[in-house]
Image (cartoon, rainbow, N blue to C red):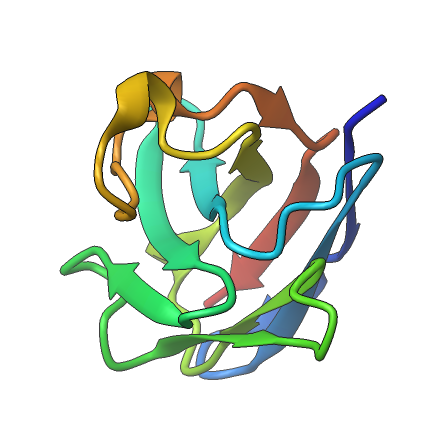
Length: 131
């Protein structure tokens, strides 16, 4: 059974850094899409980053581009979201998600940015940024 397991998060001051990790288990795909989404009180869920594992193609939202990065391990099963220069508006619960099996509907290998495209979700991890 596919599962998405997150870890990391925590509390930092403005300008600090955090690293989140996300591991998928229960499948054998080496190329698939993973995404990071965040939810803050009073705000809509926001997709902040997506990665096509294996190929390593990444996408970042305008709000985090240049500050966040994604790294993957050799198995393409664990992704790390490196968050630098954190701001108070980055605070929220961060969810990792995966689309497994990948490329629904037979589409070409690329990742979609909408949450509904991802069918397996982690438990969420809290990120707090104090000013």
